[in-house]
Length: 279
Image 1: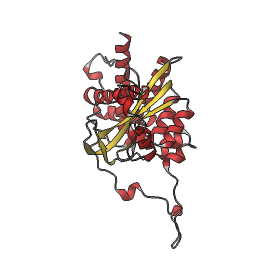
Image 2: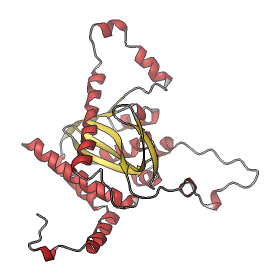
Image 3: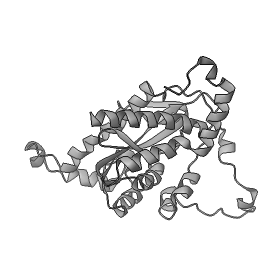
Image 4: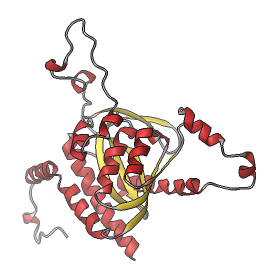
């Protein structure tokens, strides 16, 4: 299947390791995946893009907080000076290009915590995979960040990356993405954001209360609530990636190689899912 006729033609582990390092530096899996999506979805319209993240456990020592937050000494304020208030990342991203946004996201291995699909809080050491998945369970784009990065920090760069590959109508996200900047960016792309209300947001609380008792008693369900159920697609993709395509067993170290490892898995999953949809 890989093109080798005899066993002695198969490269050694050291040769494969060097080749894998070159694949990681050149982002080969993402390039092939992008070409596949561009060709497959040319002239097509995607109904929903479901956005979410999943924990990626790694076998490496997490970066210390001191090294992760280290800055150039020229940026440090002088004694007695008040450091300037840093602009929120979501606000900065609205005026940044995609490469700048990707460069701004932390990528080192560290500790993260997240509520799983059943509502239980879990913590892990490693990274976090963020993905946009189209109807039918086809991954459109993905990014890998540090485990501690909040989901909302990756919504705008991920939406920008997906918009360069496909044309979609709805952006479907859970309550972790309930932010004004994310909504504005989604609308600027010509999409309709469908985001679950975050109970900590007062405005979203008020919006939920506007659904009257009479409507609930009559069994009436808003169209956005029906479309929101499409978000389970991305959870199924994460499950397949971990169970069938190596997402649960990361043996490489460093952001570039972890991204490459997951990229090959996502590429294989994409091809398999497209083949299923054509049958």
